[in-house]
Amino acid sequence: MSRWEELTGGRTGREYAARFAALASSGKDIHGEARLCAALVPAGARVLDAGCGTGRVMIRLAELGYDCVGVDLDPSMLAVARQEEPGLPWLQADLAEFDPASLGITADFDLVVAAGNVFPLLAADTEATVVERLAAVLRPGGLIIAGFGLDEAHLPVPPSITLPEYDDCCAAAGLTFVDRFSTWDADPYNGGGYAVSVHRR
Image 1 (cartoon, helix red, strand yellow):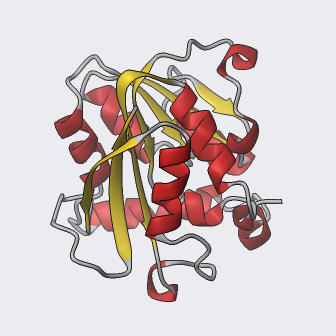
Image 2: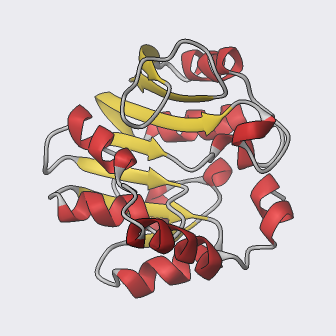
């Protein structure tokens, strides 16, 4: 069982979506992830939203002209995504067992985005497997961008993966380091409890 399932029981989709809706209504920018993705690959590029949740990032990328596929394990999150944008492909799958062919999709993505603390919320000891499976769906030269908390102040669960450990997983999967930021607004990373990392196949 993933840490996310232990934390939520797979029943928090509507509450999660409501939190971001409230932020948007208050004037907060909730599209930093999509904006950074759009700065990395041109419109029309193929994007996999790994751990897509309620679809906030992917729906915005689709609006910007990207060819998107979303995958998540939580049925309550996917139910919200499908209601919000029924015309987009929302797939239910465990990232540790992610097999595009079995889901009827082609593995040639230009970008994989894993926002929303995906890696710290995976099942224990599956991080390397998930990186390997996500790297395998990238075309040569494709990018994976992952943002996650590194300490208790930035996570709803105890920290489970460090940046060196994540970089080691990426290297083992044949990925090379490109850049690292402290926010999805691309502020430079100089240490701290949250990081957004970019690696290339």
